[in-house]
Length: 401
Ligand code: SF4
Figure 1 (spheres, rainbow, N blue to C red):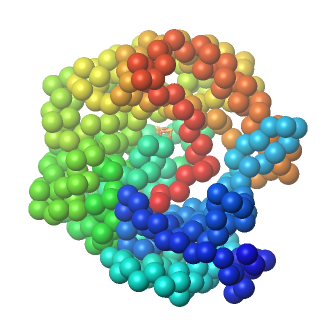
Figure 2 (cartoon, rainbow, N blue to C red; figure 1 turned 180 degrees about the horizontal axis):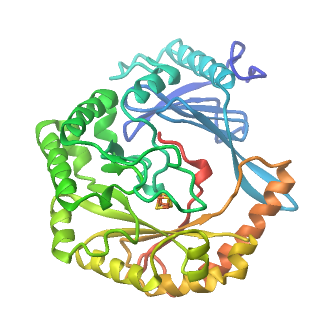
Figure 3 (cartoon, rainbow, N blue to C red; figure 1 turned 180 degrees about the vertical axis):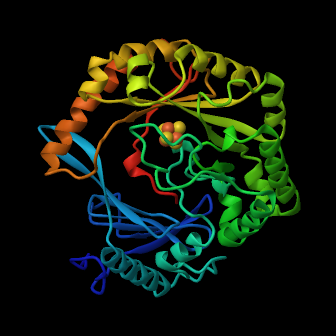
């Protein structure tokens, strides 16, 4: 197999080209992955938009907002960690040229299948432009919600003062009016096209949508359900349920009956940013709420039938060590009534994504990982599938795809 030597250059490729279809995705495979490491893949969603590709040990993902990231293993001292980097506009252009050549090779390969979508009918830049007209920004999602259809019910964070969080610092908080939300839902439907029925559930953005006034939240859920009743793409997505982030301190007075009624309206999963069980650390981070209040809230939400994703931080910085973060956090988590439907996400704190070299990056991540392992060792839940899934949450990897 002869290959081009750089992104954008596939002209001399002469190996096999196959198109696989699976779960609403199309995957072009150039070369023979089982026989040689010298292969490439290009993945397209149900609309034919490029969402990911792989070449020479590096995988790439392209977000709906037109940004793309590469991920590769950084190795040092026998240890390795995934390291991501943003692609520049120029780099992405070259990669898209290469994907276009892969599509042309497939067309020339004699595969006469008529696909419901044109592969690369829109470039990532064109998809990104359309995206910006519908969403101001999708700053972050829980790891198991990357495939949800995000619907923007609020903007920004009503609190917005946690010291470690910069997701919404420049976004004033506001709740979309019913009319705005209605218009937005139609815009979401137009944007997604065929891909909407491949989405798994709805995610109410942004930071804290589930803490909006209960009546407002109920009416927005009703609007969402009405849309699902009237459109087939929405109804498939609706069957995945509605999810949202919820802070652990502003809605502790909401009653069990109110949470049950929200659940009956479709709100099935809540993601709680607990961060730490250490009281001094919470104070230092300006994170309101006490562990006893978090336990009471989680108990109420579970009794209401909600599925929970709880998010805690892990880190090797002095803040974590001096404030006994691991012991206090494990103690708090162990008191939550989590079961096999729930998730515990451990987010390893990385103050930056800019590192001098791989060695510095791997050293930092290794120190963090040792702390994570200590935190995990303090957990007393039964292993999945009897207990909750415990997994890592790398916010630097996030792209809404
Ligand atoms: S409540 Fe959540 S979104 Fe808001 S500032 Fe704190 S961590 Fe960030």
